[in-house]
Image (cartoon, rainbow, N blue to C red; front, side, top):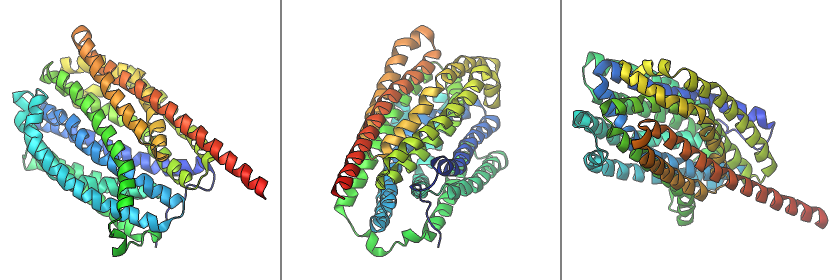
Length: 454
């Protein structure tokens, strides 16, 4: 039987970096195959097909983000139980999370398919790309259970300190995804549904690999008794999972409003926004991964009541985010046209991208630090502030683009993103520092009482 990775003992920097790098490669590969999807669709099916798939990004983020938030929230309870060495609760948490995610996956899949057409209409989707958008969406949302299964399995493994298995899963699924993309689009001539089928099948592969690993972990010898209904545990899981799910969905609503305004500018801008968003998501990954590491590290050490280690972990994760910003932010600032040429064709789309990417590159530090502090708050089991910050993000995105789109045009989308990142960072940073300082103070008082009693 395999063992979980305990993050509550040992040198902090070594533990985090050992946990971080496989997870970074996992997330980067995931983004790379998203970019490969986009590039293959764009080169194989044309800019309209690329715009149709890209136009779905904010809507898929709404649904996938909700499910990912639930999985992340559930995994906090898993990590805290492991840190506290409460293995009975650990097994029950994993079993209950599995049941809840399966039921939610079926419900989300049905709702997404039913409301896809009217939502695309509300987003002012151009008639030229509506059909492809519907076809892609029906396939993607029809396979939502596979996506949620992978998200949950990978979150459970990260909560237990295993970042290597998801990396192996993503390597294999990336190869499968790209091969199927090429085969479906260039050989079978399937259209956008080929890209969707490739994505779903690759998610099934990655979920299966992670599930095999979970079955072998010694502290997760789950039995039928662990699946027995437990109202208080369900409530605790939802208490952590729902705010995180709502935070992602609220943020997605803000992105959908951005998409609404971008679509109003024409198909060329929809194409550019889709391509640029892929790069921004890719360049966020090192800091986003540092955030995932912060969540797992904070959760386990919170469960073990080792709060001083959390401060050390914060410093390591912020250092990672800073290095990421200096390197990747600079690329966005100084080489936007080279990035644009990877996915779009034509002088005008490349010029448009050149007005967007440098602005986002300058302010990339805000979202990089946001990932660390927000995940730290979630690791403490304090999901309400991240949810409130999601509302703030949405309000800032909508407010900025509504005020400035008619003044400065497409660049308003970049400033809308930047303002959302900065506002959310301030809220999460303040909450994290307050919670950590309070925990450190409580811990110090407890130790003093113990010494006095002795």
